[in-house]
Image (cartoon, rainbow, N blue to C red; front, side, top):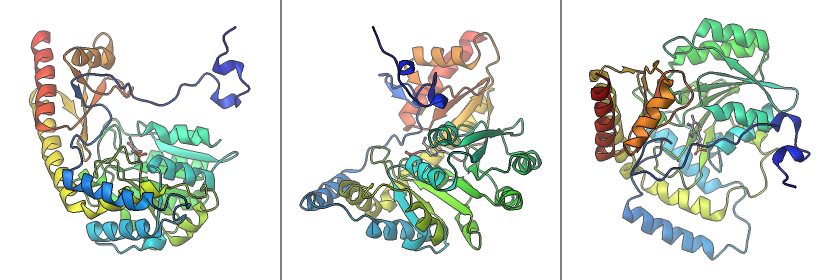
Length: 371
Ligand code: PMP
């Protein structure tokens, strides 16, 4: 007898569900998971080896549970790049921003409580909610994928969620959210509950707009979440962090596992932060490439959503088979993009100039075939 998941006594709400994950296919050009295409520069690889060697000498001991040195350096990075001063007391770090979001939901939501996001957006917000036993409300957007402030505020007033997610720049659509929208939703959330508002800034370093971080001033229920997976080119490191009022940082201590951030992770992240300027140089190149993708896709006649991220949403593919059929045709030409399930649209990550050329050649060939 074969035993499957559903034969096990798992939680009812997990029955029949599939795990999150983009296909990891072995194709020449992979532009599907918003990774940074540039490997870490060699001097940084050397520095990581040095710092990890040092950390290895103390691996018989548990790591710094509060990751104070790392939080201090992350705070310095935020202060330097946003002009808004934060310190270690405002910053908390975990294994990827997914873990940061999970800790926030464990602290502020959970069974009997609700979270809301405005979809299409980062699907893990809903999935981590489910994983923490939190009810999920899918809020609305305008046709052009910007947040419909009136409808969003009405949904918050109706459902009175405990956590509100705002993703800026949004994934998979790409556009950043303005401060007025965040403030309006914060006010709506405070009037309804009050609830915690989480601004997910995973892609903010690629944005045309400044970070929303300064909005935490005087707003203890506002949290900004960040990651080293994108701008720092360190998706394999698993390092995410948040900035908020120190009381929020104290609150997540109630749910974090002791010593959750390994000494190796802390040492590696600290080495990467020493090379911030080089890594932000790659971000500038990727922004130029992202803008080129937008321009060229528009020139080819595609409908392209404004992008502040390291990826671009394009369409429309309303013909037979919809976006998925086009995804397959692009894949047949050796380029993997992402079908996020947004009707008629696909998402392509900005890669190296050569990778982007390969992608543009593939869609050009497609266009030619269709005409
Ligand atoms: N937020 C958003 C909007 C994302 O797109 C991602 C990664 N795809 C994450 C958070 C999680 O990133 P990580 O856990 O690697 O920090």
